[in-house]
Amino acid sequence: MAGYNGGGLGSLPTTRSSDAGRHALAMPLYTTDALILRTYQLGEADRIVVFLTSDRGKKRGVANGARRQKSRFVGGLEPFTLARLAYFERERRDLVRLSYVDPLRSPMVSSDVDVLGHVGYFAELIDECAPEADPSATLFRLGAAVVDSLGGEIRIEQLARYVEYWVLRLQGVYPSLLACHRCGGDVIGGGRLDPAGGALSCTGCATDGGLALSPASMRFLRAAAATAPADASGLTLPARAARELERAHRQLISSHLEKELRSLRVLRAMRAT
Ligand SMILES: [Zn+2]
Image (cartoon, rainbow, N blue to C red; front, side, top):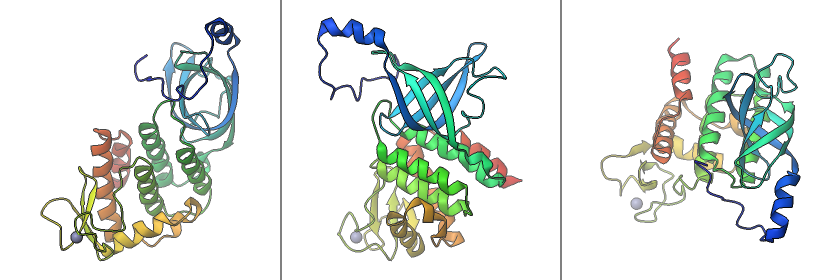
């Protein structure tokens, strides 16, 4: 049961031992909205699906026969699909069994290659940051709102920096944007970010090292903090600030996760063409 720590079960009332066997056999069916994060092959015909539920955290489930051409799961398992789904869960098993997946909205309707490239990136970022069996309704709402906004006119750079800001903030990684962590002074005039320590210093207190954040970056971040996902592509982000924040967020993410995301290679390859 690697990766499963029993999180989320602690708040449930204790089941009397005489009830435990009956509950295990009953295999309750859960119906929920969920965001598909990734899938991988299982055996000849099945897939494991990793999905973030709206109410019970991230789950891993088996979609029986999902790799067959006439599977009932066809069209519902692309990464970052928002779906209504149902699954059976057995106590003390970390793999659930998917009953059905009805796609509600798919980001694959976009014809923009850059947008499609980012879809995989967003899915991986949320997958890596969502803890197993730890309900995060806010992270789900963020992901679902981003799927919604991908269907409209968007500017992907703005949206990507916005999503990174919010995912990092929900992880408790993003430092406070309100004040310098040393002197408490204002940082709206810019500052330096220490990606390892997650602290922000004003230009007066900043020592060497860290990542410079310009006034334009600070304005973007503060606006992002007060903006709904649907309006994220309307945020002002000059090209230089966009590069600065991209670099800063990459470092915050890789130092938080202690690895680099696989999908970044795709994004880099797309940019090179
Ligand atoms: Zn300071």
